[in-house]
Structure formats: C-alpha cells, structure tokens
Length: 167
Image (tube, rainbow, N blue to C red):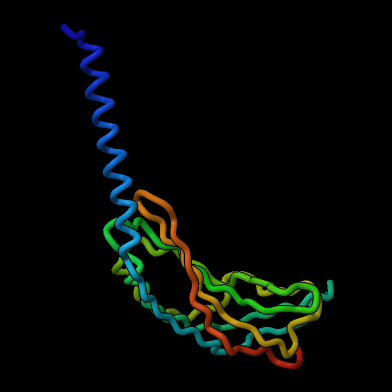
C-alpha cells in the first residue's frame, strides 16, 4: 500500500497541474477580446508658459479628459493603469514624452469618465524648445489581468500646439 505522504504528494501534484492548466486557459481567453476604447482630450487653457531660471521651458495646462475604456475590462481584468502624455520631437531628441496625468481604474463601472483637471505632473522641456511646438496628446493604458501577461496600448490624439510666446 502507498503511504499517506505519497498519496498527499500525488494529490498536491495533480491539483497544481490542473490549476496551472486553468490559469493558462484563462490567459489565452484574453486574446479573444478586441477592445475599442475611445477618448477625447481638450486643452481648456494654457495657465502657465514660462522659461525657468535654469533655461528650461515649463507649461501648465487645464485639461478636459473624457474616455470610455469599458471595453478593456473582461472577467480576467484586475485593473487598468491609464496615463496621458504629451509627445513631441526636438532637434536633439526624435521623441520626447512627458506624463501629464495618470490614474488607476479598478472596475468597469469606473472606466467611463470625464474630468477637468490641471496637469498632475510638471510639463518641462530641457531647453527652450516648446515655443510654437506642435505636439500630440497620447492616452496610454496598461491592462493588468488577474492571471496572464499584461497588455498595453495607446490612443494618439494629434493636433495640439503651444503658444509662440511665454506668458
């Protein structure tokens, strides 16, 4: 006859194998979800546009952010991290990204929102490259599942321009 420890080991091994198989199948179901999030962002006002003593440009803006990210949620979604970034190019760097706002969406009910806010993080360029600069606002999101790999994507909102002179 088999001992108690042998039977416990066999049961534990079988249980963990089934659990791993269920997690893998759950992770594969994420591939069948085709999210279609929508968002609009408006710059309501350029509150501050100045050259700091260090020579860097600094911008403060008021934003109107509206988004419907409910399609990102399915049964395996734990939460979604979302952030808004200003993206522009300069002669020194082909891509500059500055995070302006971020948030964590814990549930599908919270994934449709509209907020009016100021930039949460400072919009600073190392140099005097922001006057009259065209830039895109890009809404990035990272879907954090309960099991499986993280998924990230973005929505680019083009057509923004900073003023030609400091305020």
